[in-house]
Amino acid sequence: MARKQPINAEVPPPTGQPPKAEESPRAEPTAKPIQAEQKPTSPAPSVVKRKRKSVPPALKAIGGLVLVALVFLVAAVLGGGGSNKQDEKPAPAAVQAEPAPEEKQTPTAEAAEELGYPAFATNNTTRVGGSDPATTAAGVALAVFPSAKVAQRPAAVTLVDEDDWQGAVAAAVLMAAPVRAPLLVSAGGDLPEPTSQALDALDPQGSSATEKTQAFVIGAAASPDGLRTARVKAANPPALAVAIEALRNKLLGNAPQHIVLAPEDEPEFAAPAAAWAARSSDAVLYSGPDKLPKETAGALSEDPKTPVYVLGPSSAISSDVVREVAKIGNPVRRVSGEKPTENAIALARYASGGFGWNVNDPGHGLVVARSDESLTAAIAAPLSASGTWGPLLLTDDADTLPKALREYLLDIKPGYTTDPTRAFYNHVWVIGDQEAIDVNQQAEIDQLAELAQIGGGEE
Image: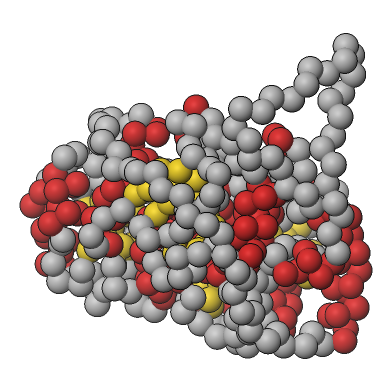
């Protein structure tokens, strides 16, 4: 049931409603064996950053003020890192005294920006502006886990290769509770400098929820030195997704309540599944356009009562595949839009049987990334599973907001009548640098997310 809250009376009604569906049965818990190995490698040099656009003077002035405040926040986040010694224990604190804080060097504003840490914000938006996936992933991880104190650090991280978007989307499920492992990126078998710096700051130590693992290494991603690692690998993307689901089931001790079936060859349609997996702990499996892979079919047949939600239009996953899933016995439904931007909105609006974001009203977090940068969209998934929790939305142009996304943001635009302090608010994370999403588009998003007064009645 939607909450009672003010809405913008001048906004036209929604152009589309989420598909109707009956309640789906929930799966009985099962467990699958983990396919893991341990293999350390060595860190590596930094990656090349692409040239950024200059910020307009007016926005630069605003950004400067925001940056000053952020420098103080970042000062406690990235400096110094933490010890990777597994057997080291802190000295006991004196009676009625707080433990001494760890010493951390204060980074410069330039260092913070290099790690993609939020450096430009408006009233209703915050940008994580890395110029490459490794830098963006580091910024996202540190935004979710500031790491100034031990309690702010993740128990583990997940390493994915920059060329493996399928692994990244499927591995986003490891960000779900209780594992909560943010994604970091390797490149060419090495760890880029932003990834190494983020690892130093995050300093994962493992926990019972991760079975003491400090880094989950997916596919061909590089392993960090000095950490307890578990590698998940397979011969192809569908098999890798099944192996990740097996790891997820082993760590959580149960099977997912739903399965998202995403297109293995259409990253722009598959990317929104990462945000949902991180928020819900639902697994992501893959299908080709016209044939269900044998690895995926085998995983579905092990628990044929689990509802399957096909993400994407019939051009990405055909009706023949839907019928194959139905023959296995799984209840199956499609959630889709004809364009990637519309497909992401369809999943954001959808709700059935405990599946779907059901974001059809004001008062939510949102994440906006480029549709043609699917690895970046996937590594932003931790922002959908923390803070203002919200779905991934997509824009297909650096300068212009897509019509469908503009209309959706207008539809959920928050409003108030007499007291703005009792209203609901929207907050939007903008992912990527100005080459990906220009500050002018960020400003438009900010305006669409802004709380607006409607009517002028007195209390």
